[in-house]
Image (tube, rainbow over all chains, first blue to last red; front, side, top):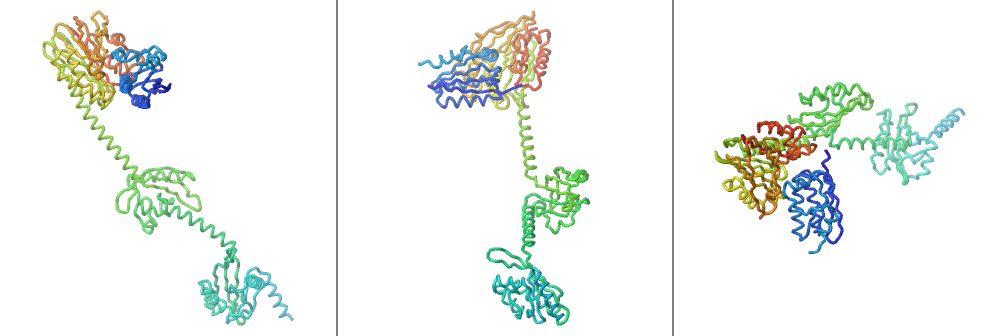
Length: 119
Length: 499
């Protein structure tokens, strides 16, 4: 079983950053993903889109990374939206009711519009 | 005439020779020199002893040598020869010109016939001396490398006699050079290691340049044992070595580190085992005795300890039961699991929704700090089949009706996991169990152990629906999960059946 995750960061300026995750997002790599996202936020990217399109499997540790990222973005006065959530992660969001906490967008573009809006 | 001819022929012979030759009479006076002697004298002036010519006393000549040791030795040598005290004298000495290093060999031989005397011969040996010096230099260099090496180098014969040992023997094993001479390898080997080393030596002895590596103990001079790692190379047929070369080094530090690591690991393992026992005691050991119900429950951590738990308590009228899952696994999850269970126990007298609300309020700050959350299913059953439950983001529960129908619990009744929002509200929902109905609550360890089956409630129900007994259903689901091999996550299953 391939238990790797790939993390791709696309900083689009104006505090907007797309974090593309692919592979497995679980206990084995939760800390690594968390570090990356924390760093991106610390660099001033407060408007995050996390693209889960490539994530085939996610467990509750992966979910806790997303929760922590959401908290960090909000603390920094920013926004976080999830995009392209595939079936297995979506089930997890539903089971845990955490779909009510996150902004789940069908596409990255939708998510970008959401986080880019001025309040 | 003949005499003159012979003398001339004799002079011609002398002149034809490259070495500088002088003949001395009994008192040391130079009576003849050859052409090479004269040429050298002409070229080098009078700075050197043998540049003096016929009629001078060679012993005086030697005195001029600025009192240097070679001149003194040469003078003594000539004296000894003239006095008949020795049959031959040789001396190698430097005779450097400003631009080039030169080495000469002085040979003094007696002239035994007639009135005696001696012949003094200076031969230029610069070429052979330089070559020899180069070899000696190289030898000194290699010797120095070997003698200063940290590694111990030994040569052992076919009879296991040590014929060479580098000074590292003293630093590693404490024996001086003298003590080591003639030692047998066997004298130094640990009894338990000797057979293996001897077999290895015999083995490589069959193959020229055969080599092998071994770890073994050797006796230090103080009686203790030292761990060495050595490479043995068969150079028995190499005429310059005639033995097996042993390159050994002290690996006591490595051995100690490994021992220390093993010890630490063992200690850690023992502590984890004790923690596992403690955690096992946090799980129910007895089944609830609620009339009209059968219960089964199991919690299997993926490691020694885990973040899953289940609990139940109650009396003859009602039973409260809960299944919780802390994110992560292992020790960090176990700490939070114990905390969550204790918090939940402390509010077990409250109605289920209030209990979950209270636990969330109490634990949310700590959980947020740890970047963790807990999914929790908390229910209360009465004897009439009424189940009141609050679901904090757990969701993994369903009712399997006696006719095989599956009732999933409604999403809208579900709150957020414990630890997400401090002020999150939790509501209670109600369901009823009729005779033969089963309530199944599990943790994500079950579906996640078999990603190939994409298990949701329906799939899990189908796996065990044919079984009437909750214990049998439980065993069936556990073996289903364990078929995948190593458990990837903690696994918890609780089954309640109304008779």
